[in-house]
Length: 371
Ligand code: T4K
Image 1 (tube, rainbow, N blue to C red):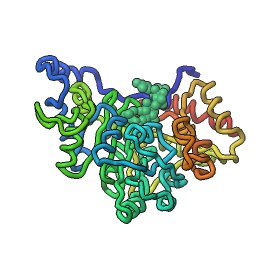
Image 2 (image 1 turned 45 degrees about the vertical axis):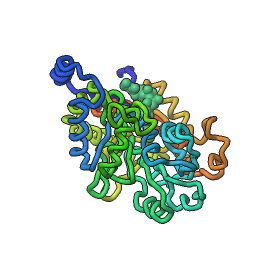
Image 3 (image 1 turned 30 degrees about the horizontal axis):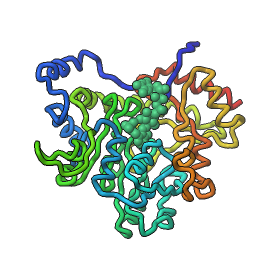
């Protein structure tokens, strides 16, 4: 049996020779950044591929989240989820905005809309839910609350590239939606990200903000940041678009094999399908409950010992990190579902090039632990 390490993910890269003509173009033009040709092409190509009105490219999703909050002038308090990557809540602190954590729904694994209303105060200005693992948040329930209370919704859609809900890209919901193209994501440009916006004026403001606030050579309209995506990243992104559908299909085959393997194992729960939802198979979380003979952390360690590097996305909860844990909304008593899920989850390896034999190693390790 191979003892090569198997990682939770491996980035898809197109054949190198496909990239060379783009590199030659960049070398010939010497246009490396600041919204040059690849940047413009890639923004348009992405908007077409995703079927969304406007895309603004970013150097990564974290800067995009920070900028999205600036764009909508979000202040005071924002209701968000503790069950995410730290970047979600960090983007609030970087804006001097107070994160208010609300427990998650056990099905969507993100903000439980039925609990959001009780967390609203006069200082609340927005809601920041996450489409966790690329699965839809309760978009209707959250929108109803936002409409009633006059709040904005900024979706952290870092996991959601290519996922669709009710015939629409998941990035097409909310006031703004933020995608990540990090190496570990379904679609990567090494590092990268984007904000999806709904109208040309908003896109314009985002584009000023990501370029130091410059509106033209001598006019600075905001205290912007440098969030621009480079030409290299944009050129790579153009190529990645040619491969993304095949990548998602291959991920789907990995997910199907896991589904079949775990269907009859007591104590291992997986996420089922959802109506009108087309997944992107960005992650394959399993939830190890009390019915399983070994604990989640024992299973995690056994996988490690077998060279299988799953990850506990998202444990610990954001609300347990030092910069968040003093807040009343971070108290464990208010977040029982998030704590249970964080204590049960292991994300198993899933990526397009994960071979059947490597996947079988993962399955065998879990089956052995089950007996
Ligand atoms: N919002 C949400 C909900 C997010 O999940 C994230 C990022 C963000 C916002 C922010 O997006 P960006 O600003 O990053 O665009 C990883 C990623 O660094 C992070 O982007 C991601 N979420 C998070 C869920 O996972 P780590 O600490 O687990 O990454 P790391 O380096 O341990 O990588 C995991 C495995 O992936 C490695 O064991 C091997 C493989 N890998 C990784 C890299 C970086 C590769 O094979 N090649 C690589 O280049 O955080």
